[in-house]
Length: 294
Image (cartoon, rainbow, N blue to C red; front, side, top):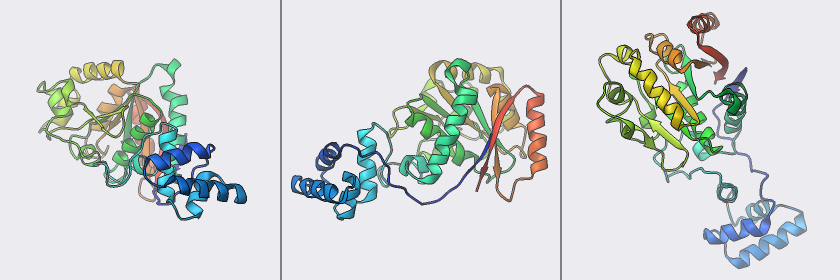
């Protein structure tokens, strides 16, 4: 399995506003239009054979983003408006759920559900692995975690990069406790933090940087903690350190038992990725696919 994930700012209007009356009521409740506007929109939509949302946009009464927000509410699909959340804007799945790049994340999610996380397969954990810093592992892991949670999967994102952690910055969370304090026995389940904007998403930050990340990850207690996560979550995604820095990523992937490889377009060396794949499969890790990040 290989596909490309592209960063862009192109939005598409969702084709989901089948019930104009319902959309209109939601827009009125949100204070975006008044009842007289709704009547005007309905007439315009009927004359032009448009959906209610498209007609409202054409009349200049609402923006595309406002219609997308209302459609998301209608379908019970969580996402946030810019300025309403501490989540970084690089988590496009949180802010632009109808964009092309988020559709790519959904397609990837579907593949992972079929090949790894399927209910009958009884697998819960997957490590995101790549060769170098800057490849986009944290970006991929964060957006995948959001789209899994939007599907209703109880999702945990673990920042297992205890050398250059980023998930606490991406989600605007505290990093005073996290994986490092859990593995050193100084914290427990309270280190897991719920992401307020998404009821099915939690994160475990890396925690304070330890002097011995590899030794902490290699402890038997890490596997015990992973098994506990698997009992409480449907999907556990693990962000990892760059494979070129140390053996951390290989250790995490081994204990997760599954890995997904990330390559950076025009940067990652195919030969080194193949070698990494061989190293992982040689220690019993199932490498289930790869993705290219632009």
